[in-house]
Length: 129
Ligand SMILES: [Zn+2]
Figure 1: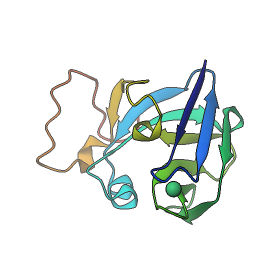
Figure 2: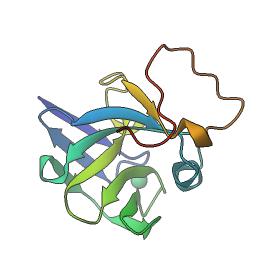
Figure 3: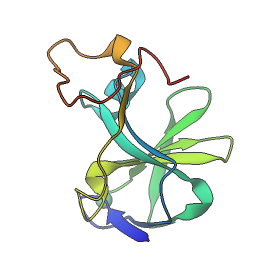
Figure 4: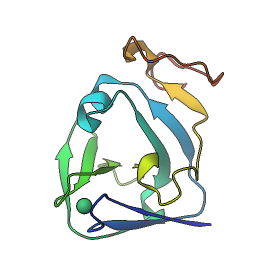
């Protein structure tokens, strides 16, 4: 299965081959700030499964993670592990926004108070064990 997506302006396009490793919503403070959003919903893929076309910028949001965005429109597309293993792809940037549904909430210990989780999915205070 190949999934396609891109940024708001269309300057950056990507494809993801195969199935994601997992699909999670992260509520950590780092994701909140980096995405300018209450949480970050992403599909985690092996980096070798992702092909990116277009001019992207990146910012190291922590020791191990870069945030990758379109230089033109600023859409935040990926959380890219610098160790070369995997990358999170923002669910909202897939052409089919309903391609994936998350299966877990992680870092709920840092969740914004008004965000109410009633989807019945497992919740982890930090990363899953
Ligand atoms: Zn763009």
